[in-house]
Amino acid sequence: MGRIIAVANQKGGVGKTTTAINLAACLAEMGKNVLVIDMDPQGNTTSGFGVDKNALENTVYEMMIGECKLADCLIENVIERVSILPANINLSGAEIEMIGIDRKEYIVADQVHPIRERYDYIIIDCPPSLSMLTVNAMTTADTVLVPIQCEYYALEGLSQLMHTIQLVQQRLNPSLEIEGVVFTMYDARTNLSLQVVENVKYNLKQTIYKTIIPRNIRLAEAPSHGKPINLYDSRSSGAESYRLLAEEVINRDEEFV
Image 1: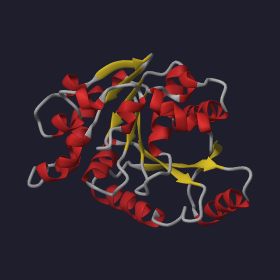
Image 2: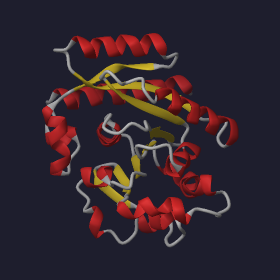
Image 3: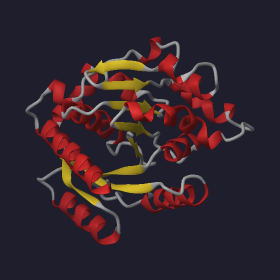
């Protein structure tokens, strides 16, 4: 049965989408079957896999409001072993549409859980906000992976995210766990990046992945070509880092068994 990982941080620009795309692609490269769910109305994960988000008839939004079934919006094998439930700007209207709906926190979980055994991993890219879309992702997920940018304000807002995760644990999904923290956009040339890593390790009583994702120009370029980094530039430091992260995720999975 597939493990479901929500990639979440309400701060924008911390590498959530980059992590969701490239972790999924590197897990697939290692022979795992992966489903990616784009829960961000910006639809950057969708376009990052080369899908034209504006040409889609059915997306996560139509699935959430009951206009289509999961199978109707599933795009299989966007790259080998990776399928996607896509999103576009329509998803920004989902919050209003869900007002008054019973079990609105479980709309995505009710659709995804019946098909989870088809995949080894399901990766959910959350929007940069603590909205009902994020809550839906967390009620669906087994664990939450938190990307943190190596910058001065890294810890700002993190306590809010942890509080949200605790609320979801208490009220909606008691089995939800924190997968861990992964540092992104690390610049080895600055003392600041090192200080941020040490600061977070000191202040955060959470699992922290050994793999640190560097600031890498090839990583930044890959989405505009509609490819994950391992297909865009297989030898780049970004590709190597996400392969190491995928290995850590698989090894951690084996620890849970």
